[in-house]
Every structure is written in C-alpha cells, then in structure tokens.
Amino acid sequence: MIIALWLFAIVGANLSIGHFGPEVSIINAFLLIGLGLTTRDHLHNRWEGKYLKVRMGLLIATGGLLSYLTQPAVGRIALASVVAFAISEVIDAIIYHRTKSINKSNAVSGFVDSVLFPTLAFGGFPVLIILGQWVAKFSGGYLWSLILKKKTWVAILAFLGIASTQAQNIQVHQNEHGQYVTAEVFVPGKIETYAFIDQYFYGADVIYGEVCLYRNIGDIAVTVQMEAGDAKFFSIPEVLLAGVRYKGLEVLARSDDQVQFTYVWFKRWGNVQFNGYVDVWGWDEWYAIAQPQIWYWLNDNIAIGGEVFADFKSEDYTPSVAVKVQF
Image (cartoon, rainbow, N blue to C red):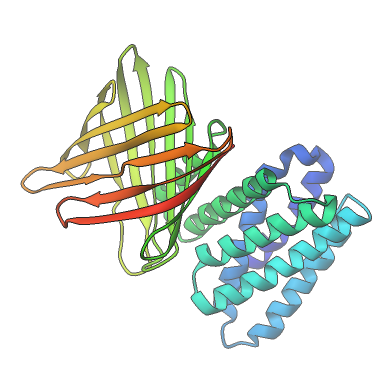
C-alpha cells in the first residue's frame, strides 16, 4: 500500500503538470511531492534491517526513471526534474536515517528539490518561487504524515491553515536553542481566517499550529478556533475554543473546561511593524503567555526583526532574531 502511494505521488506529479500546466505546481508540491517524501520515510521504517540500502537505492532509481518517462517536458527541464528528484530523495533518506524525523527530512529534502529544479531548469535563483515551493512541500509532507499516523484533527488543522492563499508569509527564527520556522496565513473578509504552524528543529521535534475562523459583524466577531500539535517525546492535546471578539480582545470557552482571554494587536508606522498577542487561560490555576514581534520591512516582501516568547508562569523569556518573507 505504501509503495503504491509513493508510485502514485511520483507519476501523478508529472502527469498532472503535463495535463494542467505549471499553474498547478504549488498544488502538486503540497499534495503529491509531500506525499512522496513522507511515504518514502515510512518505507524506510519498514525496511530497517532488511537490505535497507539496496531497497532504498532501487526505490530512488525507479523514481528517477519514472520521473523521466512521465515528464511532459523535454531537454533541460526534463533533466532538471530527474536530477532534483534523485538528489532530494537521497538527502531525504540520509537525514531520516540519522534523525528518524519525517519533518526534518522533509524540510531539508524539500528545500533542496525546490532550489535545484528551478535553478537547473530555468537558470537564475528565483527566491520567492523557491520559498513558495518549499513551504508547499514541507506543509504537504507534514499533512500526509499526520494522516498516515491517523492524527485526523491535527491534519484538518494543517489543511485549513495551509489551504488559504492570501497574505501568506514564512518566518525563519534563531534563538538560543536553535532554529524554528513559522508559516502563517490570513484571509480577510466577513468570514475571516487566520492560521499558523510552528516547526521547531531542536529538542523534542515539536510542531504546533492554530486555526481561527471569525464571522465579523461590525466591531464584534463570533469565533471558533482549534489548537493542536505533535511532539517526539510528549503529547500535545487538541483543544477547541469558541467565543467572541471585540476589536482585539477575545473571550473564549475551551474544550478542556477552561476560560481564555486573548488580546491581539497590530500596529504599523511606515516600514516598522509591531504586532503580537497575549493569552491568559485557566480556572483553578492560571497561565499566561505573550509573543510580541517587531519587524522592519526592507521592501514589500522581506522584513527583518524578531520576537520574544514570554511564559509568565515559568518566567521563561526567550528572544529570537528572524527574517520574514511575504507572498
């Protein structure tokens, strides 16, 4: 079954490009290439200690051949497709063998594939295209890993957040512990959507996300929200929230029988942006966290800045420096 899914992903990605054209490349990256990377990692687990290197070598060679035979383009583009596939799959296999982390191996191999294909096929270094493809592949791989692990609610959260197509950005942060990446989307309107996913590349390999839906009625909005995540050494509960928002202040009932107050702010003066949130929740015992961010926009697409994650109960205050790319 896993091999069949992997073959479907490889062949489907090439045939869909041939039928629908390059405008479906982001959907391809999200649904099919992410599936291919993730199912290959599952096969790695199944073949551990059973001629793993030989089987992986044959699998990648088969995928390269299929990429060539089903590639609708010719010449330089077809060669770029095969080379990018083969190199990214080998890197994915090496990273996964060492870390046993689907998210880490997908993040690295997806980035390599996103850099190699457009660079080899078209020349130059199209930064926004590379980053957009990488976000789609990593996000799709994460979604498929949740589905294969039967974490349905977390998969729904990821899909709702990633499927939005307006006001997307990706942030790469560095703090004292290591790197983490935030993918964020916002869709305005009477029915408003905000979602983000954080991936931490240190410690317990944590990935966490939230999606918030609002029905705006003037300054008041009714909201339904979900929080969920996954970690290597501990579980992150899935929490549903519902309540109202007045301007930036939200009052929410939580599915874990607690009440939550959230305040969100966004201010911009020229190229300088100051935004963030404060969450206070609990009943018998209270918790409070905040995450203020400051950014300086170099142009319409790129900002530099950072944030501070503040956990007031544990008195943990962790600053980071970051770069943000807006799509």
